[in-house]
Length: 238
Image (cartoon, rainbow, N blue to C red; front, side, top):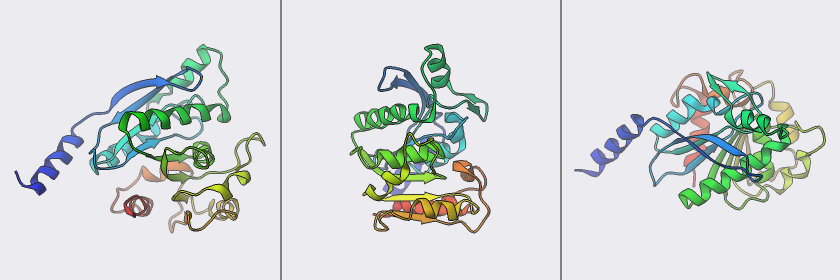
């Protein structure tokens, strides 16, 4: 079997492999529900974190596209969220049953635990993708969690009612970070990133109107959607 044929055989196998539901504990013991999409061992592992009011369902199509390209993905339900694309947020439901708080800041421990879970399972640093409030939490964690390889942040902002100030963390980001938003959000995002080190943090401003969060990846594909093309270019750079 030639190397080229074997590579395409592997990609075909990935496209026919459905996601697997998995679970693991958060830092406080709450069980996190996630979807696991198996990719190639030679490609990066990507952790996918959803926006407010959503679930791991935010990444149903996105994760499948990344999986087709060879990336292993883990899409989690954070405790702050609800449902999207017909997928309920099981971590949120469990947190409510246990009477645990489910504010944005409370989800940081879920994301942190997911990074550690992925690092321990796959034995490599993790690429993280966040959407809205989770994008902000990932930018914060990027300043302290040594198991993050790269950050992709869709529509981050100051969402935490002064409990967390992103301005305290942006200047300290020292890993490769790609940040984007809708076109309307771009000026405000640039202001948020004004203290970032341009050596590490790059803002992508779209030509199209776009939308808030990673929903911008829902339409088109990696060849026609400008967000997809720019994001994949970032993933492929050394």
